[in-house]
Amino acid sequence: MDKLRIILSGIVKNNPTFVLMLGMCPTLATTTSAVNGAGMGAATMAVLILSNIVISLIKGVIPSKVRIPAYIVVIAAFVTVVELLMKAYLPELSKSLGVFIPLIVVNCIILGRAEGFAAKNGVLDSALDGVGTGLGFTLALTLVGAVREMLGSGAIFGHKFIAGDGMLIFVLAPGAFLVLGYLMVAFNRLTAKMKS
Amino acid sequence: MKNTLLNMILVLGGISAVASAGVGYVYKITEGPIAAAVEANKTAALAGVLPAFDATTPAEMTLDEIPVTVHTATQGGNVVGYAVETATRQGFSGEFRLMVGFSPNGKVLAVEVLQHAETPGLGDKMAGEGNPLLASFRGRNPGGMNLAVRKDGGDVDALTAATITSRAYVDAVARAFNAVVRSTGGAGADADAGATANTRDNETPAAF
Image 1: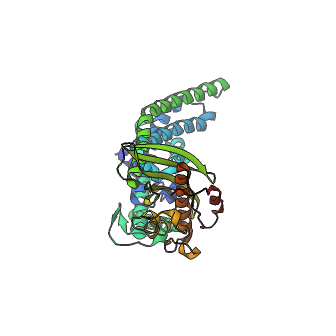
Image 2 (image 1 turned 90 degrees about the horizontal axis):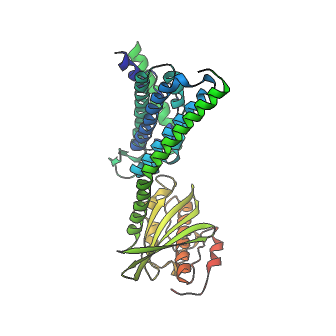
Image 3 (image 1 turned 45 degrees about the vertical axis):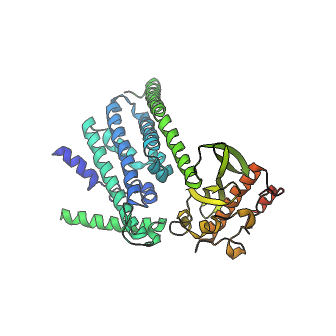
């Protein structure tokens, strides 16, 4: 039961995008379509799970003064691994996400979970926290991407349901802010209602 | 562990060593597939703009400080066309790259957009099949055209509401044509599409 709560917390109560508002740069930049959002989310989730596991394993041997540089080395290594794997086996996706894959290194969600959870908890809990937070991020990005794609290009996951163009502003940068803002309102309204 | 200097150096050094070994290992595994993906991408782009061919020889050159590659496609030793990787820096969002296919007598066969960051819904229509830019060039020899968009008094139909992208596209195609001309030793075309006056430097006696 407790394990389930760790996962759910990352998706709802501590959703990185809608509640903690971390990692806004990739959220705004890569969600031009649902597929791009999901791809970015999945890549971040892979790094998050792996780095959480490793950091919780080595937390005992790291002197506290050098813990941040040590975490960054671990995270950067996993990001590079994910980037290489995507380039090799998912060239199309890696092309459309471009520089935002290497930029996962500086995503505050990853360092935040390393410092705030993995450094204080066991391996299994840390892995589950990675799964939960990663899922929360992936779902949020996919949702933002899906809304922008529907409104902006009249398509869902690449399947067009109206002919011609949609409202282009939603594919462009301003649309990212609009969609993210309204989704944040809706999400927090909904979770507030569930609590009361 | 205690915060002694030796501890810090050992731990950070150890973590870095393990991490770089891991990254190096993954790099070794993915080196082949990445090269294959890049190669497949290029072959697909070449096949998209050329008639059937069995071999290509690339020739790299620099026109207006922009690297351009001319792939001469041959079948059974006969030249069947030229595919040119060209680019322009005058796009609405900076540089974009095109692959332009030419027949042996200099006619444009097809144009594919390799990479761009133009505005979705406006400038990115240049990548669509049958857009006015492509339609203006297809089947014609750029050497015999007035290379500028109609608004600037040329022969090329621009994309609606994307004049800057259209001018850049013309610039890139003109550069591709000049590259073919240079690699075969003929005359260049002159793009009047704005800041491309230095393409004039490439003018040499006519061959096409």
